[in-house]
Image (cartoon, rainbow, N blue to C red; front, top):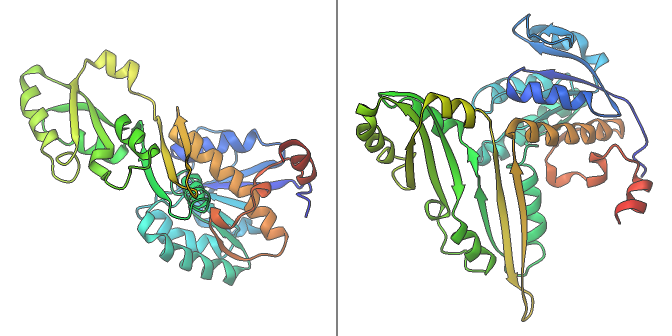
Length: 324
């Protein structure tokens, strides 16, 4: 089948960091038009048309794909099925152990509305999921390890900021380079989550509070206590200069024996902006969702079920000439 050109009419629900990134990336696509943004707020500071979220269903005939830029904790579970009954949707749901339940719920809702629901399209879950499946299929007995970072953890940063005396704070998850070397050598079976990563915190606080803050952070159950954690105390100026971005990334390392020879496959992401890259993946899979709907498909899809050429604005024939 050819990925014949079609102009995809796109819209967004939610306008936080992810929604803003999706907005600018839709505008950069050669085959997408941004119809509007649905929000509970009327003023978003954008020149894109803004509509009340409660009125979204009234616009269903004008939209080919709706990007759900909502939080995974409560917003997506509560709101996404309702949108899928009216629209072809694409989300970045990232609660790994609940994805099977989300898949089933979205599949039922999308089929009820005759739509496609593309789920969990970020980078993990998402691109990392795709790479884990592809790489593990190459080895009869694959050893696989996933490392996250260097990246800013929003949940752990929030925990740091809740420590008494902390004025400003962030936490970065950083892969243990020695653990990555061990994984590449096929010795990853003994690598635990705590030994695979270290945590670094950057905190602005009064000097008199430093010792107590360091103790509170490094002994915090679940968040920091099991990990090798370092706390750096810095000035407001350094925090403002060096810690305003949202970097992230990681590695998926797969290795195994191939009948007497050992090989390894590594997929690496180094992201200056987590929201921008998550949006890039979501927008590409939004293109695929619109194309699947145009083919008459319905129901939920994960990244594992989507042919790569459906992600590209380039026609299949050209992709075969260029990339195969």
